[in-house]
Amino acid sequence: MASRGGFSSRIGFIAAAAGSAVGLGNIWRFPYEAGENGGGAFLLVYILCILLIGFPVMVGEIAIGRSTKRDAFGAYYVLGGWKWSLVGLWGILSAIMFLSVYNVVAGWAFVYFIQSIDGSLLNIKNFGDHFSNQISDVTDLFFYSMGFMVITGLIVAGGIQKGIEKAAKILMPALFILLIELILYSLTLDNALVGVKYYLIPKFEDINLKTIYSALGQAFFSLSLGMAALITYGSYISKKENIVGAAAIVTAADTAIAFLAGLLIFPLVFSQGVSPSEGPGLVFVVLPSIFASMGTIGMYVGAAFFLLLCFAALTSTISLLEIPVTFLVDEKGYSRKKMVLFFSVLIFAVGIPSMLSQGAVDSLTSFAYYEGKTKAVFDVVFDIFSDIGLPLGGFLMSLFISTHWKLTNFHTELAVGNPRYPGSFVQKFLSFVITFFAPLFLGIMFVTTVLHKFFGITLI
Ligand code: TRP
Image (cartoon, rainbow, N blue to C red; front, side, top):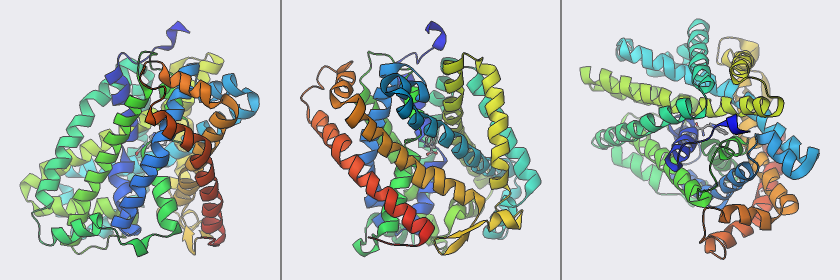
């Protein structure tokens, strides 16, 4: 399979994996999840989930990918036969469903970018109303989400090195710098410190089942885990690389960006007297109002911010589209370009009900009733394929490694490119998590989350 291509360098892989990880999950979703789940309490549980579960699962996925050099389905098939290959298929299905909704949110970011450049965003009186009107405006959404999918498709069609690597290497550092500058500005505002305290000081009484499953779901969402994205990327990295080291850098970078996004948003939330549990609109409501308050310069800052948000989303949509594309290219030998076209159209179409479920069509907006409230199709898809489905993918992966592929093979793969690995602390830690902690904790969380979310039953 010489024509498969691969990452040109260690930095190429890290940039692309970090690009996949850093996305709307960090800047849009993390702050609102934290705001809905107690601020500091959420941050604490989130960081524990990252260290104890997220990082080991990431290492596991990359190792499976690199040892087989196949797509998600093929990798499980080669190592575990057809039964385990279903786990790979589940990952591919999740990627398709997840991207169909993710692309809708990317469309929102795109609209806000355009409205920042043309200045219209600065003249808005009530940003809350503006947001709800915007996400129910079918024409805009259709156009911008489709635009986003087209751009994603064009880059993925370019192949691994030319497209994905190049984009990620330039855009990620720019995002980081802009975030830091905005944080410094937001910290100077009145009441900013109340926000910082809310965010950094955990109130332990706020920790409950919902905090835990939300933080766990967010950790998987943000690190791009549980849907075989990193099996796919791992299949493109060289045997010379140190997987544990690369995963540590990606995890740290992703967590740092999410942390910074919180540090930007909460001072703004409190200085503007907005409720931190505003939900998915949080970032789209508080940020534009701060840009507006800056005067003319706010227009440039706002445009830069939403542009980078679009870029962050783009490196993620690229990684998501790559999953089903690599699958059929590897397994069936179809042409990459044809598969890109096929999946972009399919995924866009699958996303239409979610797109229309934010106020445009009533029956889709109050589509299902659980967790004590009605849910839009948009939320149902994210519940199933993100909060529940991704940790489930991680659970199945850890079972696969411990019961089928076996720890010795897993460790052997990790020692390739990392001579100091055998006998190290990390090795012991990974053995413990993969064979014991991850299956137990993720198994319990799966059951309790399903019971809680869909049946309103709280066991713990
Ligand atoms: N991690 C991305 C974000 O935070 C979302 C994402 C991209 C993703 N690729 C993924 C999530 C693969 C799970 C699996 O925005």
